[in-house]
Amino acid sequence: MKKILHFLLVIITAISCTTKNNYKVPEQVIISGKILNFNPENPNVHLSVNRLGLGSLQIHEEIDSIGYFTASFESYTPTDVWVLYKTNFLVLTHPGDSIYVEFNGNPQQRPELLKSINFSGDAASQNQNAAKFQLMYFSNPMYYDWDAKAKAVKELGKDEYISYLDSLQNVRDKLYNQFVSDVNPNKETEIWAKTYLDEDYFDALAFYPAKHKRANKLTNKDWSVPISYYDNLKKRIPISESMFISGYALSNFINRFHYDYVRNNLWEDEENQKYKTNDGFIAGPGNVIDSLIVYGVIKHTPDSLLKQMVLTELIRQNFEKSDIRLFEKYRKVIESNIKESFLIEPLLEQYNIIKERLDNPQIASEAMLKKIADSSAKQIMDSIITTNKGKVIYLDCWATWCAPCISEMPNSKELRKKMEGKDVAFVYMCLDSEEKLWKASLAELQLTGQHYFLTKEQSTDIRKIFEVSGIPHYFLIDKKGIIIEKGSHLRPNNVEKKIVKLLKE
Image (tube, rainbow, N blue to C red; front, side, top):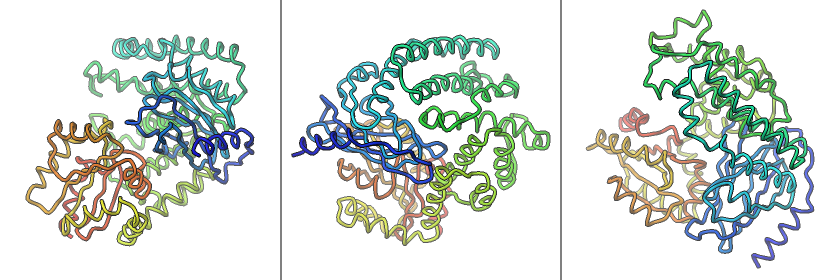
């Protein structure tokens, strides 16, 4: 029966058509497919939807017993999506698309996987050509010669490094011209490929100053680039709607322009020099710094679309910390500058969700628990809250394969030592992992506390109900069992004051 259903899905996707979207209303995108030779012990496929200014949307879906999977999300604009199974590749999507893909699940490296890939449904020809581009790119030393790149970063001065980047850009241009000549892609795919290649240049340019100092053990006092160095980032401007399909590359650029061009120029403004310390850092009252950054983004971003995206990123990053104060204080300014529906509407939706949770934490907690009333996830949460009744609970969602999760464990140990003897429970919830690897990790980490291993079904429930889009992800639960705050920002070295505050309540 499953084979028949998937066959029908392929037929439906093949005959469906994509309608033009005005970026004002989101439409569903479906990515389904079959992973050939998949490993039953690795039963999940992961998607990362690149959203301009809004961060990536993480989707985790189970693979059935014969290799099929289906994932869906809503999208306002065209964008590319990372599909990850052992390694990853990009799929080009449009609002309303239904895309079907098959690929070999054995390869650990992208080129081998890309050789096996086959698309049908909407944008099939376009994605087949995009896969050919990725095969050319990831097979080129320009991409994988990391030693040469590291050597250039360490040894070359500013002007020499820019010359080095220019030489690499010539290689990229040749690859792009070969792709266009050999494959004859449509115009949108050409723009996507060119935007992706160009971002290599801007990423390397932006990261060079910090990497050069780190590689040579230099401080800000020892060495720095002039402010004019970051003018090179303006070569990417103007940003056009035709580039939206390049969600990954453009999202990277939004971040680089925000932190490297805007903020560096902001603190070079004569009236802001007083906030710079002798070490090159910024210090000042929080409300003043907030105001300078908001208006600095507006002042120093010359492109209209890019300005809206940088402002969106700024507010979204605060929302990830459950912090709505900046948005509320500058709401009129923000809404008068962010005009595009695909940016402001998701921000407003997220704001309303966070505000409701902050205003009514008990109601928000009850609502989340109600959603899992008939699932095994409820039993887990009930067990955690009941076992630790009267205590503040610090809940850590992690996985054995998650490097950032593992790197935070020593900090968690230190925090636990500081809280020893206090009414604080440290609970660790392992998601999307193999049980034998979980046990091995605990043995290696020597991590005390309360540990829960979740099956794939339980992991899915927890992720969906509690909006755990990425890990590590943390929960702060008060003595009454109410979820006060959650998110990736509640890392062990940032949360001590909040725990102490809850202990006093």
